[in-house]
Length: 631
Image 1 (cartoon, rainbow, N blue to C red):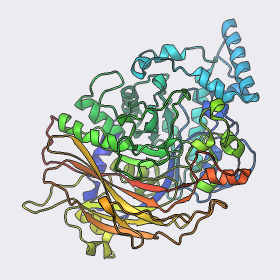
Image 2 (image 1 turned 180 degrees about the vertical axis):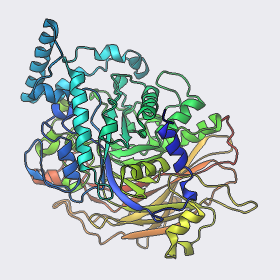
Image 3 (image 1 turned 30 degrees about the vertical axis):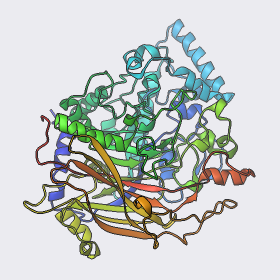
Image 4 (image 1 turned 60 degrees about the vertical axis):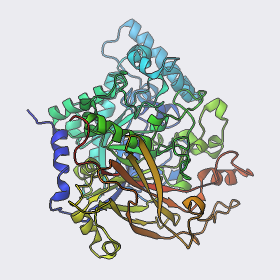
């Protein structure tokens, strides 16, 4: 019998900073952990009928491929180092099989034959007449129930009248995908990770997770992906991952995504079953969900102006649409956003003795085109249908969110020992990862108690960062006894040479005050040019070189590299706090401006012409020597 590989793996990587490393400086890998192909029912219904996992991996490797909707030859600007194809577990491959071949049940009876024929006819008709998106929305339950109540009746709500043979179709699609991933996996060069999406959506609340594994096709053939049709509750997914990990010797982790449209439930203090989370629940979540997705096509989930009114950059790429409830007014809730979750985690740790929200952050696309396109001038939309500029600018009242509502985002950046399945999952477990909204901003952060500016100037500053401190995603050791110490961050950021220069580097701090209430503050640490903070300590804007008539810009402003050693000026000994770094580019053109110019429009309407792309590091935590709550 196997020991639990996930538990053993996490226990091992927790001590890695103290071990000799085969690759002491580690290498920076770029990838996407969230991509859908024509095996996903909603992707197929929205125009992706041909981009399968093979196309997805070939695009990621830099090969030219055929776009599944407009049929042009397309190619990524800069290839990726790794990719997770994460098709929905629910009805995986089923819609494609119904449309092309029909799903044959084993010995179907006359009623099954009738249901199959009717389902096939409706699906084919919806796709052929261009109403696949409406068919998709009509099939998934939302109703008027609150999410917690909807979850309790989820299986009843979704019904059981699926086409006969749907389970056979799912198993076949999964096996074909796993074999394709193995064929494209090239250790040391390109990593094809086997995963899927668990798509719980009770009452229209997005509680989706992307599951990532270190499995090869042989181990993957021993299980079928767990979907929301099996259970809408996260703890049931976690139990499946633990159980299947023991049975197959596979390591798993789950990545919460797109929390900004979770109706406050992704980072709630209560479980989806409506009970207060306890220490065991918190420990399981922290163990199996060490990383969350902070930015993607459906908007940014870092924070919101309602919760961060003093943060001048809190309004990046807002997204105002719920899944299947396009007409419902969007209401931001604290449980939707990562920064609020990090603060909530500190409070829960003080109560429970364990922090369920001690996670790292990554970006990924959630593209349903089979094309991981996070590059602003090379963005192919959320759905294949969005690849046409006229469709991006379409009527939101008839099709819901349009392509201009979407962000060309994001990317997962991983500091790994090696470009392999195990190397990348190790980095996720250490949380030595970060997110960008698309550009390849190179970012390194170490935390310690005694770093100085001289350390950052040394040739071996990375080695010193590991030796005397901890990298992003880790917890600071206890401060030196008797010293007047404060958390100190050593930060190095470099611009993507194919994108904008850097405007500034900021540190976002969250902490519990003397009364145990959560607080936050954003510090401007280092910036380009000779600007000086004005009244209230606010740094003036960097400027704007974007030509609105041509959608071009220059790097006459900003800096190619920004670095600093920053010491917390407000730290109090014993304070429970977190620190993460946010790096901002100068303004650059948004894809909505490029489309509007191409279409001959005077403007893209209410959509922005420019954006300030950014990177978010995983946090570094400082905590009291003895947590207040029980363990």
